[in-house]
Image (cartoon, rainbow, N blue to C red; front, side, top):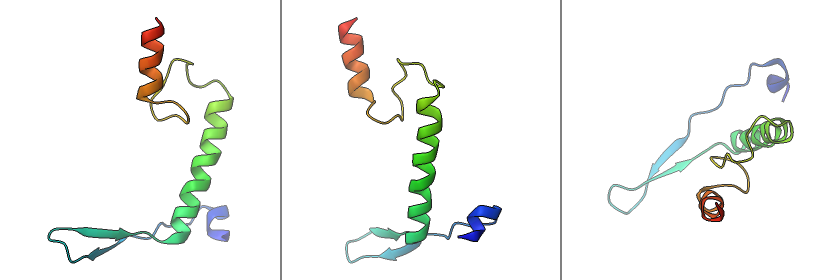
Length: 77
């Protein structure tokens, strides 16, 4: 994973496999890419969630927050 450290890592294109159902495509992603994407997600969430970058009433694309928590907040007034 030296490529990640020196900034030269390139994500691989996903492989598309046609399955027996009509007009259905199965997309297979490289396992290493999935691990790297998850690690990046964890790091970015740690940076942005723990340093007050988001308003407490922001619900979009945040862990443990979404449309249901937004609706509950609106309902409470």
